Image (cartoon, rainbow over all chains, first blue to last red; front, side):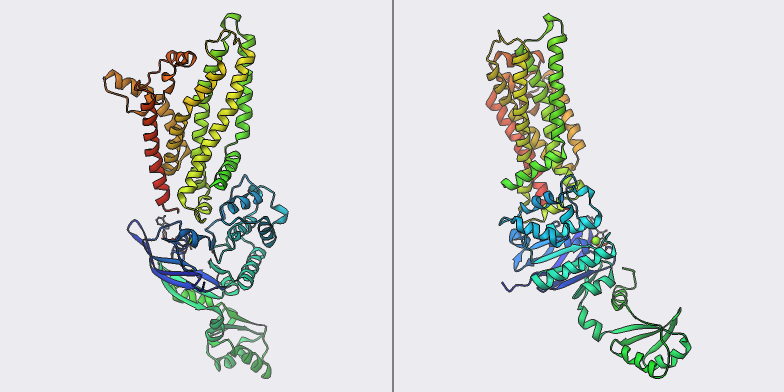
Amino acid sequence: MSAKPLVIRNLSKSFKTKKIIEDLSFELDKGKIYGFLGPNGAGKTTTIRMLVSLLHADQGEITVNGFDLNTERSNALSRIGAVVENPEMYNLMSGMQNLNHFARMHKPKISEERINELVEFVELKGAIHDKVKTYSLGMKQRLGIAQALLHKPNVLILDEPTNGLDPKGIRQLRKYLRTLARDEGVTVLVSTHLLSETELMCDEVLIIQDGKFVKQFSMDEDSSEQTVNALFRGPSNQELIPLLEEFGTVEEEEKYIVVSGIQQEQVPTIIQTAAERGILLYEVILKDTLEDQFLELTGGESA
Amino acid sequence: MNSLIYNELIKTWYRNGVKWFLTVLIGLYIIVAISLRFFLNENSIPTAGSFLLTSQTFINGTILLFYGVIITTSSITSEFHKGTIKQLAIRPIPRFKVLASKLISGFISLISLMVVFNVIIYLVSVLLFDASNASESLLVTTLTSCLYQIPVYVFYLALSVIIGTLFKSTTIAVVLFFVIDTAGGMITGLFSMLEWNASYFIYPNLMLEVYSDNTLISSQTMQGMIAGSGEGLLFSLTIILIYSLALGSIGFYRFQKQDIA
Ligand SMILES: Nc1ncnc2c1ncn2[C@@H]1O[C@H](COP(=O)(O)OP(=O)(O)OP(=O)(O)O)[C@@H](O)[C@H]1O
Ligand SMILES: [Mg+2]
């Protein structure tokens, strides 16, 4: 089957008279991780709910590997795994009982090996027989990911999976998602507000605002071709200014000299030139280009 | 479908504290029975038949019914409250099957509890009380009385489904249960006072015991001055079926269509 893992066309949804999603279209490719971005209230969760048939779209079409979510619901849904907002589980049952419970909702039968494999994958082996109510948020998130993967979906959808995760947890999540995408060809759609994390985790970024599509672009192309802001700091910033002015517009910002709008590849050249001229540097920071872009695209509101 | 029902039964076991319900109720029942048998004045000790039917009326007709309504309603409402409904609704399973599994599991739970309790009720009645001059076979009476109860359970479970899906509230289900249970008799009385025909109203049709020619069972209904619809067993069963189907369909329709947010 060569159909794309997930295709959304002209999706619209209103609550009462308020249009929440308007004519939204996008496509996801196999084995890529997509960051789904947008300011609060942009409609990310609403879109995700439609993708997993919790909400009925007013208009538009969703296909999963070519299966229409409306007319071939079972075929479509058996190719999607998801955690929508919080990973709610049955608290009085153990993690394993929860997994078995959800596993029984799929056909063909999900093997015990598959379940154990996932428990290992999300590193819950030690706690899997404890009641879920004793789990930390991070453990619940991991259990959520395990239950979403039981049936080997082609598309994994996670709504703010980094919520409540500590830095270590976030790094683990990144590792899981990378493994899934690279090794198993799973397409991952992750909504998040953590832009620096998106840069590390995602291959592509999809931005929506006010329920409308804003932009979709690849992260790799972006970091090399797009311009960045570079922040420099040395023992004497005044010495730095003339040098940096040769490369771009210079601004003083607190203890840094900021060169905005330069190519990333120019940065090593700047450092080398500084060294040749005997100008000392403490640090160079390349500023979150995604954040700048995001704010620019969504009109400066914070994410 | 079987695995869905199995899931629901497991969740019921954990959610509704079935273990505690069984322990406490069986314990209390045996204590009450022993107290009646050994501490009551010799002449006022009930016969096995009368103890049996009083127990059945109270346990099958009120306690289990009530518990069954709670089990079934909460199997729907708790998924919404906890948010786990999302995890169910995103599976490649039609929504009506999810709801059907809850209804069927509620019914299975209720019938299983009924079997357990009626075995106990029968044994306690026969072993502790005087069964020597019962007018009917007590075993047959126990079974018959249970059979009359089953259509009533069906109606109340259909009621649970609609309340669970429409109001998402176990409290409303519990209140409605009491309203129907107590107001039903009053409304029926009002109907007959005004000389209206109450036959199509659900309440009198739930009194199926009036159709029994088992003297123990019908004497029980006479005692409580319960007036049935009097239109015949088949008529009452049909009314129960129609009400149940109507309520159930509304619940299923609502569940199938609703946005889960
Ligand atoms: N059930 C609902 N009824 C009415 N309005 C709703 C409902 N659910 C969401 N909305 C509205 O839809 C809009 C989009 O909400 P949504 O939760 O999809 O945003 P989001 O992009 O996920 O935001 P966040 O980043 O805060 O999670 C918001 O304006 C919200 O108020
Ligand atoms: Mg959201």
